[in-house]
Image (cartoon, rainbow, N blue to C red; front, side):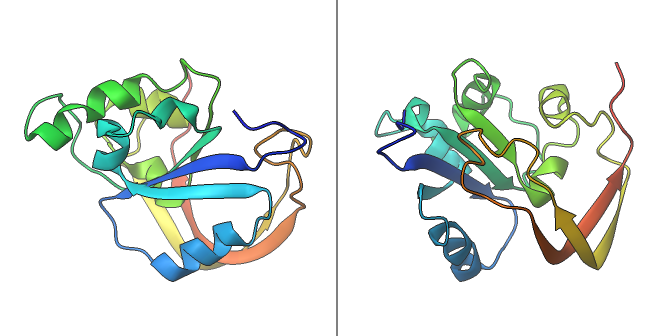
Length: 162
């Protein structure tokens, strides 16, 4: 894990199931001086060939997979369910970014992770002016960030109440 004083925060960015502007994502994460980011496809993250999945300080999900992982299928997909269900058992931060909140819409595990029970019913609105407030500026995930405004799309979903 990164030291708060000397090392960059190691961030895995997990993608797949949705096209995106690759240069823009790289620019966004390169603009954060204390972050060393490692973009990777979901299958690479899950298979963990180098054995480093648990060494990231933060895992950012920017994926949009719609099929619930079963632990079956091609070898590179077999470990996805196991790897994802391990989330929360290590001290890693977990960020579910943008459309990733709608990934795996029929999987209770992912619904619990994102805190939204029914993610099959949603609305979206393009070109919304959004104010992002940093709730915990001293947390390792948000250290050094300041609140900002941006234009993006927003989603409406039913809230998870258990």
